[in-house]
Length: 130
Image: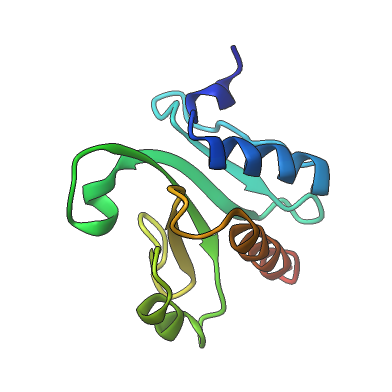
């Protein structure tokens, strides 16, 4: 069993496989005390572009105590407030800078293709930083 098996949601598994095949980047589990938290780094500059974690839904939405897979992604600062306000299933970045990051609960609220686009966008933003 690999560490990535901690994420059992089908949408999450599809995204993990997609990132590996699309970019050749694998999840990194950086914290021993947080086995249900991992990051993807941009191969060019080693900056994080995604944080994948398993947390209580309540921490993201304010409701429910079930554990969910959450993906934090970089997003354009100037577009973020409107995007969060108008896109169902997208929240201010949890545990990250809310001016630059969004959180998406991987529960099929957003389609996998939409999340792939958000991952592409986040990776591009991270890749543009020095």
